[in-house]
Length: 137
Figure 1 (cartoon, rainbow, N blue to C red):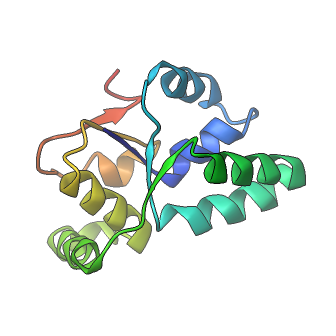
Figure 2: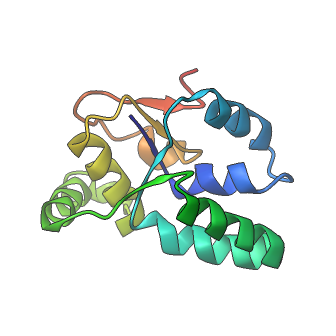
Figure 3: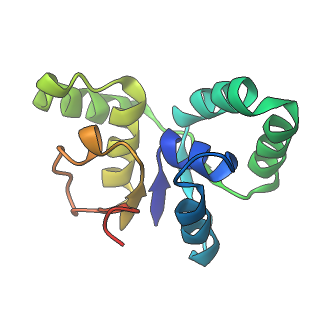
């Protein structure tokens, strides 16, 4: 299972993003949809609408509702786990979204996290040691 961070979804949607090609190829090669933790949805929605305009935003919403991605709606344990990760790595000042992505990745035993945020994700040691794509390709 592959869990996606906001940065990866934005790179997938934005043809002008410098990592678009590699992220698009990665998305196309996977047989199963990426898992999007619930906390990424508002960020992607906002950034798609603000940066890429109404057409891309509508396509994002269509993909989301058509099952192009799986959404992990989470539970209280995810929040508790995210908070533990934030406390353990306090010096990184992890936000809610990054911590939730990490907690979900551990919870579902993800094989990889797709992210461009290596400052945070590259510094945290997660159970199961999921790869960080595209870095670890």
